[in-house]
Image 1: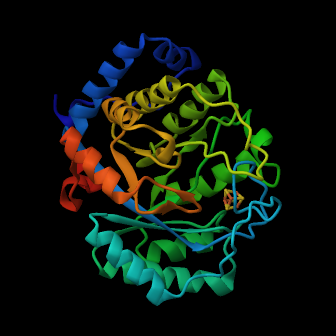
Image 2 (image 1 turned 135 degrees about the vertical axis):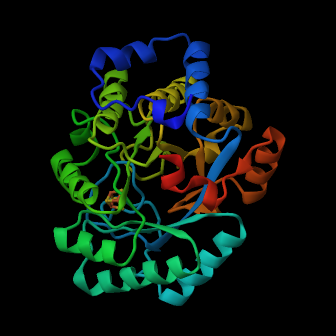
Length: 329
Ligand code: SF4
């Protein structure tokens, strides 16, 4: 089947998504793998690196996050990094095979005095030949325009969970505010990166409604990070119940089926996932991972472990020219 024949829908009903979750596990994973192979080269994975350029002291109260100023997690706060240090990290990531370099700042929204420094970072990272992504919190239309002019490729703004469950996770902003920033990005030339976190005590209904939100956007996010909650001591979610690993794989498989042309990224929580579970996630259609030592404040599997695992599974890193959105979409 050619890519032109892949049906991309934006009108998924609750019942349809519920029916996918209800499929026997093997049927669901098999369908997701076939869907994946219709669009993406088989046995490939995109490698990305994320750098925290401003750490901690965030005024928001996301219940899972070590960076909120409200929780005593022992996190060491760091001011906005300088350009030179960011470029050293970007070159190192590129040498390790990353094709996208993502910058994250723990802000509710960026302040004018910092914003110019971030746009310069974007321009300089792009000169290295890397794709760029930033996550800076909520944006104004003017800021979106400035990021677009700086040549930003992706903006990450996660919805985290369903609209119904969101108030249980964060009280300092609304789902609507998240959607407003996403709408501004959608109207620009910048690609949307938007996903969520599993294992925060959400129900199956929440998982269905979270995925429906993403899948029913006018355009699917090009990148969909699916995180597994890292239970950080000192945060309100530190004692959350573990999600059944097979339910986590189901979320990935359903995301693959709903958004066939998106990169589904295994993000935070990978250190808690066994090699065998990684393989199941790839089988279910995950085709992107973060590499490096840390994902913001939580550890990632050592680079060596990732390389050994990808070798054992005979999975190759996607090259930049293989994965440009123009090729894939
Ligand atoms: S998730 Fe982001 S917005 Fe929420 S507390 Fe952490 S850094 Fe702040």
